[in-house]
Image 1 (cartoon, helix red, strand yellow):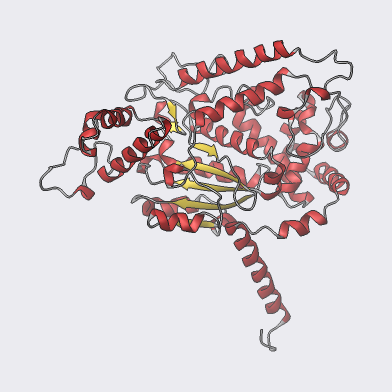
Image 2 (cartoon, rainbow, N blue to C red; image 1 turned 30 degrees about the horizontal axis):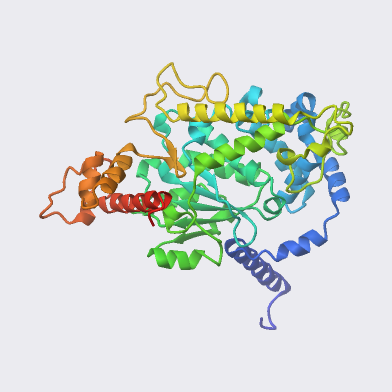
Length: 489
């Protein structure tokens, strides 16, 4: 810094340097700056300041939140308010606005009947099992090196033609974020997105969906979107990249990293620096089993629904702000990893009169899980006009009267499996001497312009406009996975 600089110029340089530090922290997971933030937090003062800021918001901008207070005031406890303070680094004015927008957006997205339901598979997501079962949005089992949740998005799993709406997939994204922030570390540190576009078709990039997801993360969801890592972009990515970037908030655009090159190069860039592990589909060692995850999630949510909550206590924040009697509000509870899903039996009534007998509880859990698996299996079949399945609850309002192409689909390894690929895998396992191309053809894949003798394989695409080399890679991965599960090495 040279001595002739003005004070304004020096201040701008200092601000720019700070921004660079924060940007690098978000991209590479260096979150030491959080330690300073935590040491300065006074929870009581922050909640009191939130009360003042919420009171200042015009009544017309918090209509949905006021309706929640009347219908289910326990949803607006201190724990809920603190989520928004964390999302805005304890800047109460911004946190208050985000909280009001959250309930406004939740009302618009889930509708007047479901917006107050629990954010669970049988609650607010009861009509969205078809979109959910695609495995388009998943949570990796481990956080990244900075303790942030990793939201894994496989663009090739997005198939609205099977009968779900854009809003339904948007609700699935909301659900996954709410699952992630049950962990206090994630609530404090935020999320990163790991996007895998390599096997997606051009039409599977949904600009409208991404715009709504980005707006939710920017303005309403109680979470910080720290960075985005795009792994193994395909040949279409150069076309959609500018459109994708335009759908992102400006601060998120600066935190997008595209990882291309060989698998070893990408792994070297990702593992150890940002991620502990990545899915096997993109070259890592994590085998995603989305069906298993859903089953375990259902059990966890059923444990909560089969237990009765502890005695209620008034909220210290929203009662005075929104008006009315707040005495019916449930206890705010400590903000942490423990949630209603993990409330122990000891937290029920002291004399045990409200406790659920273990046999009844197990029967409740077993029945609920069995119903869930049955409904999920039904939802993975084609949604027929006027006769859609009704997973989780009667009446699936988001299944469109459209007929999906091809045979029925199943949930497997985080996405709905292509039955042609299933048959190709089986053919190769039954006859190892088959070439990959012959196995694909036996599975039902058609390569209309392929001449075995003269056509370069890297130019060949199938009837779905997917490269033959890509199909072969998929087949090899599926074969390795099948052998591993069978204990064959």
